Amino acid sequence: MGQIELFLNITVGLIMIILLAQLFGSMAQKVGQPRVVGEMISGIFLGPTFFGYLLPDIQGQIFNNETISILFVLSIIALAFYMFIVGLEIDFSKLEKSVARHTFFLSIAGFFPAAITGFLVAFLLYGNFVVNSNSLVFSLFIGTAVAMTAFPMLTRILEEKGITHTKVGTLALFSASIIDVFCWILLAVVLALHKANGYGSVLFTFFGLLLLVIVGYFIIRPIIQWMITTKFQNAIKDNESLPPVLFATILSLILLYAISTEVLGLYAVFGGFVLGVCMPRKKLFQKKLIASMEPMVKVFLLPIFFAYSGLKTQFIGLMNPSIISIIIILTIACFISKYGACTLTMRAMGYSWRTSSSVGSLMNAKGLMELILANVGLSTGIISEEVFALLIIISVITTAAAMPLYNYSLTKESRILQKNGSKPTSLTQKN
Image 1: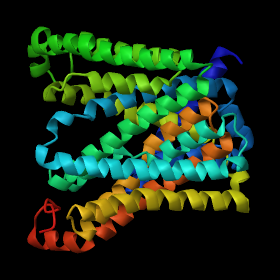
Image 2 (image 1 turned 180 degrees about the vertical axis):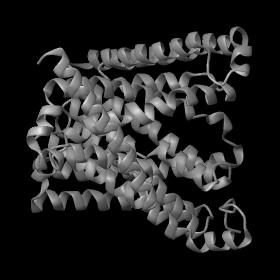
Image 3 (image 1 turned 120 degrees about the vertical axis):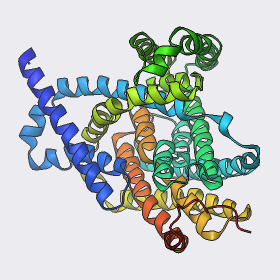
């Protein structure tokens, strides 16, 4: 394929990806769903199940092997940048002591029952799949997938509802962030076990990751802190965006960390996440850095990731009774172990049934985080394309169910709040 033809295919493909993501995202919002649900479906639409089935020649021409290779590189960069933002938004210094104990219990309830349930179900169903990983690695991976929570999506929902700074909002937010940290740590263990050629390989991965954390927190963090409080302090205050030198430094560090975690046998997204967690917690700096990165990441880069995932998702092969029954079993397992455990824990801590159910519904959503996890599993050979498609379906179902269940849980309280003309800040403990 010539360079001009490749350019045309990539350009046409990107136009389709960006516009469809916006279209499907807007449609999702109009029916009361999070935007990410529509964006995920837009990627699936471009894949072999829909676009490839209806217009196979055109789809094959635009999204050929060379095009998909370029989309793969862009999607990895997208995930590194996105996970950096996710890590940057986690700030445990804001966790109040009054909420800390409840956060601990909700985090435990949101992680361990789901992870154990997912592990057991996967272990029992292991023989139904043809995968390149052993039963332990496969089961641990599925356990991680079931335990995952859509922390970034939950953050946006709480902001839209105006309850981010309430007791329940803070509780849900920090619990979700802790659960996702647990999941990424467990995934690192799974990847190390999968790629290990012995204990030496596992130790190399572990100590390499530990070194990245130490360098990030004790060397990079102080340097960035000095840059934003001394060298560029006035420039940050006086301008709407970050100074180019500072912004370029951070972007370069994200890519460097992505490369480092890939070399360690982990996935590039780990690098972005680790660096984001290590960044200084200065409100103005965080706000302007996110404002500089988020539009490009969400409007341009993430839709590429959704499209790349969709191009690998084939649903036609899942249309048989045994696979459908597995999807139903795993979906029920997700709801019982995640929604059920979180709801009961909230109730046991003294919250109303409606508030408990609303938090449980949000914690059960998988969203983009599940999509990222599934891509890690597929690219490293832990799961097959069949299991990948299965996880995509579960991610869409749990995410799509989150808002209806959330709204239903709060119908009565929301009506009272609207009648009083106040924001839903009364989602507090039951007296």
